[in-house]
Structure formats: structure tokens, C-alpha cells
Length: 179
Image (tube, rainbow, N blue to C red; front, side, top):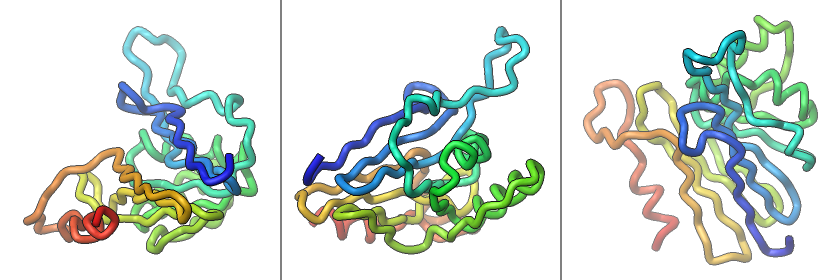
């Protein structure tokens, strides 16, 4: 997979829940989000569903969380158990929510703040502030040094230029990648 960037949704497409996306460069594999799907009323004795992690046979080096909703962080302990060596990055609010989840499960894992560009091989992910119904939500700009490509990955967002609670979506940073 030389000079390629592969993006594969594992869950969350066409539904609300189980959000997870695999991003592969020639050097590393990254997962974006670790969500759960709450079952429908006619599903008996099932608390939640997650993507089938048995399908992920690659070594995962990083897990990046975009925000703190359950459909993005709800299965984090399953991912930590499956990929214990992976570094985890999350916005501050989501980081606190994840730490509470891990405490409840008696698990410990360092969660790094998602503030700056994360490089993996020739590819990189740059967090971009977006608005949503939960604070501290990030969109992700995925780039590759050897490809004339930028992928804007925003799972959930709204454009609120006058929010009294947080800064507006960072449209200026998005524009930088598309000049």
C-alpha cells in the first residue's frame, strides 16, 4: 500500500451508533471512534452492539476520538482490550468521560489530548474544532505527504457561528487545506 491512504468505515454508516473508521497508511493503522449502537426495542437481551473487531486483523497504533457521545466512545474498553498497545487521543471533554468509563471498568489507560496534528508515516491527522450538541467536538483533516489529497472527516457537526458556549466551527483552518 505504498503512497496510499485507505479509509474503511467499520460501523456507523447509515445508522446512529457503532461509529468506527479504519484509516490505513503504508506505515500505520488508526481507528477513529469507538462507539456503541443501542439496540432497537425488538432486540431482546442485548445491551449494545459494536463493530466486529475480529475483522480488524491489523495492528492498530492509534485510536482517535472525535467527541464524547456514546456512539463514539461507548465501546472504548473493548478497543483497549483488543488493541492494548494503541495510543488514544481525545478532546478534553471526551477524555474526562472516557477516564470515568475506564475507572468504572477498573481499567487504566493514558488518554492524550487531541490538540495538535498527529503524524503517522507519510500521513497526518489535524483536529479541527467543530460545533455539535456536545462540547469540544473535533473534525479531522486527513492528509498524506505524497498524495495531493485532503480528506475532511467530520462525523457529527453543526455550523454555529454565534454559539454563546464555545468558539464557532474553524472554517478558516478547513480552508487552509483546500487552497
